[in-house]
Length: 577
View 1 (cartoon, helix red, strand yellow):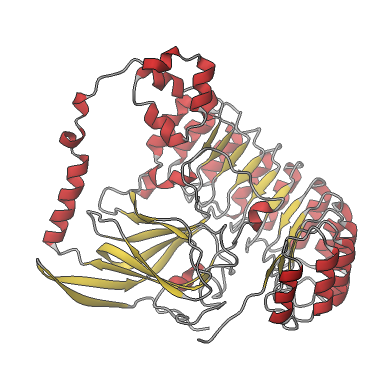
View 2 (view 1 turned 45 degrees about the vertical axis):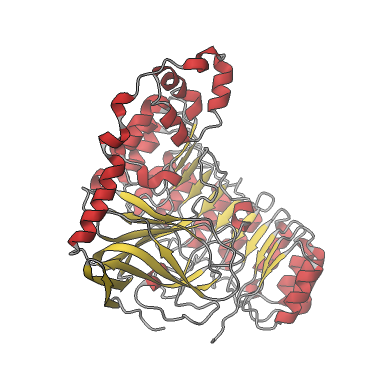
């Protein structure tokens, strides 16, 4: 594997009516943050950092390890038993599933991107630019972002492409961007080779002045003429019974409610009804959310029971105000990719949210190792997501001892968990109701740990992700025992376990009557006959990945797709042209 070069750039000149403009073309210098990645943290394969530097794969098309790949694709993760239920009304029809935050070497006035998409393109739905000159302060939860491009996901042909994005004009130079992705229309993992920024150097006075003038014109007091408005008294809305008005308001998204509250005092009072704010999802508006946002919600959220501030950048103090205002009503709290979450935050939410049932802390890098132990005090917790955190084995053991009602547990890519077998033993002992387990890349999990879970949680288990857990050995009989003793298993991922054999697949076909999703990607020694038997016998199957199974031919996969049209059968490939 070659290491990406961290700098590659060029300067060209474009003649305009104002003279000679310096046009910069820069490739990614650093990846600052991302929501998920397929590869392991210590690996060079399928990781977000592969975006750094010029393209290595393009114009080749297919599955290549030196690209950026996210954790999920398509609708299947949303259909799994562990899938979190969406809540809150928001206006966007294509909510973002993932993001990557990238930094370029120099600031420019950006005019566009060239995105080198080398496999399953079309998932990009939004590009945000950070105004680093406008008083942005991450520590105070005040970061200025603007949307420079948005669009629906695209259905593209099966070939690589350079996706050229033209930005809306902005009045400031920047080198910090965030790209957002909507995966649910993808048929397989999207892979991105490189991203190139195109923009003007910031010494172009004429360009700057023209952009600032444009920005001022649309936001000046004269243009808005605020003084010409007079306060209304509610008009015909006052004639409606409160129940009817509440019913109408319940169809509005959160932004619309806030805008309506600014029209008159009567509608302000109506839109502040606490029952309109029982479920608040701020993730789609992360770039607009600040401490002021959360503080303004305090008076409306007295009955708040579900809150999502994933991707937002605020501070402990403002979050505390909202959690305390909920008055222990909160049962769901999602904080994915919130770097501001620290030990102090955990202490606050443990004290204020003692009835919490769902907690999402995936990719929260501000909590250190054993500090996760505080979660053990949330005795009502049923759903816990610790994907890609630094949680340690001792902390997980404390959580399992304290949270006896756990049904869903995500410990995928938790590289600091050194003893997954001990974790599995504690799950068997304390989490008797466990339904969904994500052990993606659990390097230390052996057959002994899996047997412990099988023998004690066999009837409730519905989902098990053992992708890239190569320490599990088929010769122990653990996979056969799994499907025999866990009849309600709906999702089973055995990605890249080279020891899985035909005997395992025969038992999957016989005992996996409830299987809906099966991933055997990268399993070398399985025959077409055994895979065909699974397709024949597992009538509920809807997803099957046989990518990189050497003995399975493309012609056979095409035949299966016709014979079993209700099953989405995946077989990835790579090309050299």
